Image 1 (cartoon, each protein chain N blue to C red):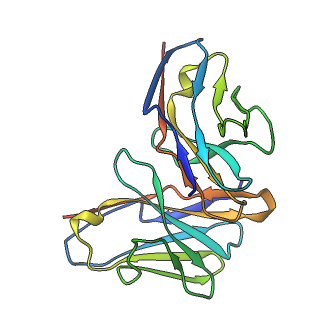
Image 2 (image 1 turned 135 degrees about the vertical axis):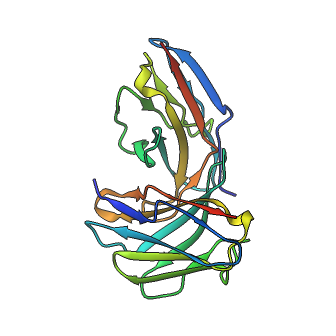
Length: 109
Length: 115
């Protein structure tokens, strides 16, 4: 069965501190992994995807197939990073996403 | 990026009435759209896949007669919650994939409150 697990509901860090939002997945095959972000009162938007291997707003995420993980990292948190973060997977870009329960990141000044 | 809109953004209705929610892809065509539901402090759960010109595909546990989906054009899918009850109160979100970007674009969501 497809499943995405985000073990932390809430993560609070101080500004300038490193951030790691954990994501583990269960999938039989080769999924596409994504991180979505939802800022206060805004719609869900794509932050990054594993196939592009890019850094967006200082965030990176590496797919570890051995550990079935796709943790989101940023070396220095900023206040504007405070938001809800969802890890998600799909088999392709045109199929529905399976979401984790989300982690609320709070960056404290 | 592409834009997906939803209307209305929020609606309050009495128990037993029906509510229609529209999802539009504003600057691209979408033969497929997805409808998700999000209860407070929970994640998005897929309800159904809307297919242009054919019947929607519903996830297990979602009543197709209660949540009617119509995808009559390449830019519009509608979700009608029939005979709504308080337990249907939720945040309904649609998304549309854009093949060019291999990405899904989400609408802003519709908050439904059934009294």
